Image (cartoon, rainbow, N blue to C red; front, side, top):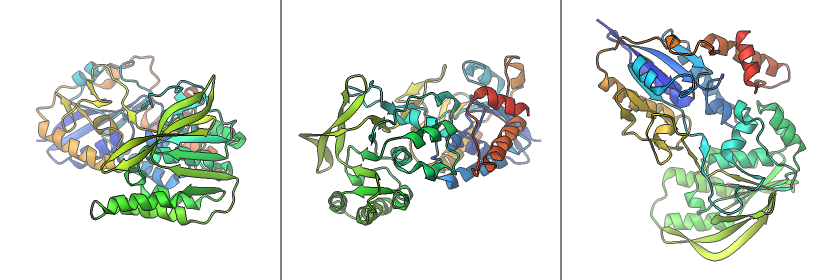
Amino acid sequence: MSATYKVAIVGAGPAGYFTAQALQNSQSDELKFEIDMIERLPTPWGLVRSGVAPDHPKIKTVAKVFEKIASDPGFRLFGNIELGKDVTLAELKDAYDVVVIATGSALGRKLGIPGEELRGSISAADFVPWYNGHPDFTHIDVPLDGGVAVVIGAGNVAMDCARILAIDPLELDTTDVAPHALSALHESKIRKVHIAARRGAEHASFTSPELRDLPKLEHTDVHINADEIQAATARALAKGDIEKDLKSNLDAMQAIADHPHSGHERSLDLHFLLAPKEIVGTDKVQGITFSINKVEGDKVVDTGETHTISCSLVISAIGYHAAPLAGVPADMGKVKNVDGRVDENLYVVGWAKRGPSGVIGTNKSDAAAVVELIVSDLKSPKKSTNIDEILPITNEVITQEKWSRINAAEIAAGEAVGKPRLKEVSREKLLSLGEG
């Protein structure tokens, strides 16, 4: 005799879909799952839609996996439903055998330095969804009227921000970048972009594929100081054998340093051992002052010297933390949990569980481990309430069928202008497309 359990997954990003997939893969003749995925936006896919850079379309092909997961007869999508507003956590816990939080980490960490409030100082947590067409970020103020921008951070998000600012917008014309952002980037006067990292090159969190893509930019010269990379390599070697990923990173940086320059008007410069000290300006950003660091043993220390870069735009890409959810315990910017378990019948996956680390694929193994825990915790199925009974009757729910209409409409609109899709950024128009 089989038992069927109802599971609510809150968040329709990679962590949510991989959790649904792991649940589907755990099914047997004796164990079945009915999965309801609840998403605040009218559109699913999370960072695959609103985080992955538009000039990296291959990464977005994982959406095909998500659509296959969604085609399972035991899966339902409830888009345009917000936890804490349209439905409470207590209601979900009462209605479902298992509730999984997969809401990610959407708030950018602050630099905590003077001048951070000036116009022209923004977070990657705002800039990335702005150029990717997230409905909540279409009106972000991104001043592009100066010649120089500085991006602070040493990970792939910082790299994406810098690359979008530094490349010729012509290279974005055939991508799914948001139309309002593409128009602004074509008008941009920025020609020089700096990436500044607080620690040495051996500590950078860039991945080597991202680094190896930089010399391929057609209209942008990329600069790294070869001496810095050689010094970083020597420091890493002094500790013993260099682990594979670090060696790949350092080799990629060395290749950038050795790559010939073409004298392009546009440039992207990577700097290390610069810690942001103060953003300079009166009513808007006019520059940023850094403390110059050095590496002593295993520590990065301040030399007491400073370096100032004149610029009109500063983007901080130093990490994310999860937005607080009513009724969900938080700890250090994450949902408080032990191996994914929060409390009785409540679990967490993805960035909300472990913090903003790893790539999209990392969520697959993470979700599988949590689902294994969920299965081991299962008790007798409860007489569950249908979510339709607890949602306000005024809600315009985006079902999988309605999302399919939106998806098809965007792809068709994109094909007409030589793009993979033309994103709609208005909630009202998205809802209208869903109605067909």
